[in-house]
Length: 102
Image (cartoon, rainbow, N blue to C red):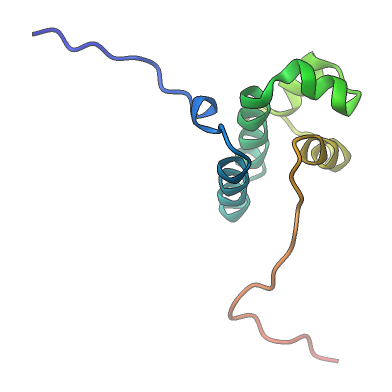
């Protein structure tokens, strides 16, 4: 019996705004900038890199480079991409952190 496998790609499963938001949230919880950039890249591929390039005003090739695990996008690029994807960055307090002393 021969086992047949296919390549699994997360971009095939980021088909709703909610899934994309949860995926990006998990990447931010990881805290590794490379994971965050790669997650944005996965969401961008799922939505269409060409359209994202148009929406952000950035070159498609530059987006592929910046949003790869080896990429180091500027924060302005991250904000443009997040906005163009119809997402929003928010903050919440870390649990267990004490109040700042004055």
